[in-house]
Amino acid sequence: MDLTNIQTAELLIDIFAAAILVTAFLIVSSRSLVFYIRLFALQSFFLGVVALLVVLGYGETHILIAAVLTIAIKAIAIPVVLTRVIERIHVQKEIRFSISITASLLLCGGIVILADSVAQSILRSPHADATAVSRVLSVSIAMMLIGLFIMMTRRKALTQIVGLLTMENGVFLSGLSITYGMPLIVEIGIFFDILVAVLILGVFVFRINKTFESISIDSLRSLRH
Amino acid sequence: MNAMLTVILPPLLQLLLVLAFAPLITGIIRKTKARLQRRRGASVVQPYFDLAKLLKKEVVVSPVASWLFHATPYIVFSSTLVIALLVPTLVTPVPLHWIGDIITVIYLFALGRFFLALAGLDTGSAFGGLGSSREMSIASIIEPAMMLAIFTAAVTAGSTNLSIIVDRLSSTPASMLNPAHLLAFAGLFIVTLAETGRVPVDNPATHLELTMIHEAMILEYSGRYLAFIEWASQMKLLLFLALMSNMFFPLGMATTWSPGALVLGCVAFVLKVTGLAIVVAVVESTNAKLRLFRVPELLMVAFILSLLALILYFIIGA
Image 1 (cartoon, each protein chain N blue to C red):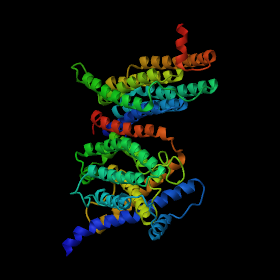
Image 2 (image 1 turned 180 degrees about the vertical axis):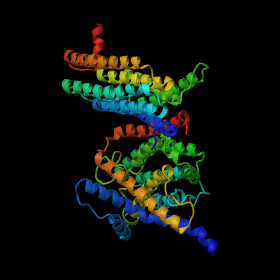
Image 3 (image 1 turned 60 degrees about the horizontal axis):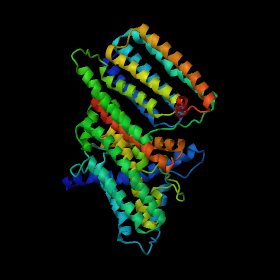
Image 4 (image 1 turned 45 degrees about the horizontal axis):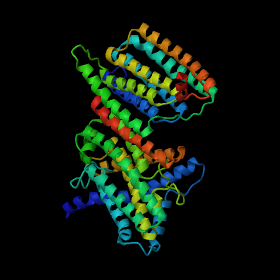
């Protein structure tokens, strides 16, 4: 299989973009914190593969470092940190929802349709410069919205982190699809930002758990009184 | 005379293949499961002996049962036979392609299920009613998922006719790998597990559990009637596997009734279906049966996968 062939690269990018979207849906459908983190690792790995395919297929070598960093930081380092946090705080590993799984899956299906209509109107605007991978723009917008949805409806501090990271994956993918990736210095900045954010949030979750003996965000409401 | 032969022979051949091969597939799945549990397991031809034994035994019918109870086994069996002529197995032109398309197949399956559910209620036993109500509530979620998965393949090919779907796909092999197609395949796989009563949804190996669905409906059946129903459900499994393998990956299918192409088609069909059957057995062995109230979540995943497939077809295009 010749990866530098444009058609092969296009087909593989389509497949992996679909796989990224499927992992987002599997995160929404899952009940266990451990699955959340494993699925997120898988999602980041697919994202890194898409970036690598853009490097190989379209000769955009400047994303190579960002692609490798995606796999190293988001698919390996962050999941390891989060898994360690879970191990240390011995929380109940089942997630509570404010919307049932079936309803949230249906809503997320609606989100994808919405995201596609938004993406189409962006691509149709006269200022838009369509790249070869702009087809995945709808997938990336859907990812951002699904990440937001996870943050809104899943009631554990750790699921909020996974939701945030899913949104960030969506942002990276949209950068990739509109402009073949942002400048390297920006990407590197974002990576360190995310890594540090996860470390701090991990410590936060640990502290929250110590204070409230739970990481359910419902108990945080009591801080207001 | 020769013209008669070419009209009658192909459907007959396909019918015989499905009838004869279906119990073997069930045997292969049971054997694989047994080996995965480190048991020796019954021989792969055991389902044939079971059917032969049941066909010889007398039928015991409850005195309160109506004509519906007697008619259902034949309705289920014959509707499955018609489906066997509508689903592509060896050769691309399906024998009965002038009767109907994929939607006919879906509704013929629904017809069999409808009568089974009625027969479950007919004898008035508590178990039967329980099984019927469960079967129908699960069916109400499976059917849209199945339709969407199949429509994705139909939209890609531009037709709901199974022969045309298979033809178009064989002529453009690259579209077999398009993401919409792969997702629809995954959706149809979960649908198959649910439709044929496999482990995450139902347990085909038990007769005495409160969680059973399909077995609860047919608990009152015995002898010849039970043999027909069992045989029909084995054929249903084979036909679903055939749909999955040929509608999505029609590699090696014969396009004419020449002996050479037929042999190749036969080998490809047996290999693909056996491979899928082993995958089903592995899924069954590595998963626990879901609680009944969790089943809709799994089926919703199948529905969403199929829906995503259809959406992705329009987003990314083929």
